[in-house]
Length: 258
Image (cartoon, rainbow, N blue to C red):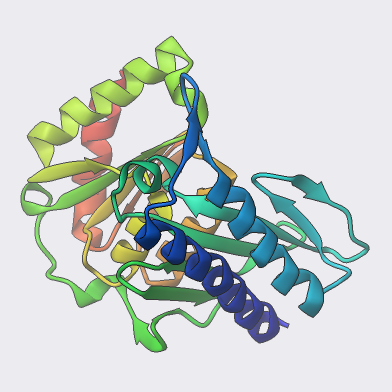
């Protein structure tokens, strides 16, 4: 079943992502803004195309889709669909965005796919079978095993962080700590794109704080299947491509949130 759902996930994200590319390249990126989020018409249209692919292949599977919510099904399999990760980027003309899908058997992730349409990058992770980028097997160790002080670290925060003063202060402290501990940190406003870069060794580490399931389930599977080392304490997690960086990274994070 893992191969079946992984294939469907890849087809679904490509269907959504191809639509996003057409809209982006034509300049049709209108969106509505509130204090903490952005919604574009393209989110809904991409999601409709992704759901069509999933329902046709697996009509009994349950689905959670970011725009339309829960869709019931009789199966233990449940999909998590993010039709446009990086909506704000998309809306303002930045090309860092993606469509993503993950599928779980009960609580166990089975497969995930991410498609970033502008660089035309497709990532597919299968539980127990690694990660492929555009069909080729990749690993987080494919990059240079640099020490933390020369590393580039992505930071992912969930939607709840901005609207919560204590969580926002923690996020700011983490950014300050990584200023000192690493070469550079980047705020990953399209997390699944950065998870893909981590999985093929282009990014050195990822740190997450209260992440949202729409990106985290796919990202976690990509990182683990790519060979990343991971540590978690409640809402805070760290993933590193070079195992030697886990302890110093975690020490910096713990010092920041004390």
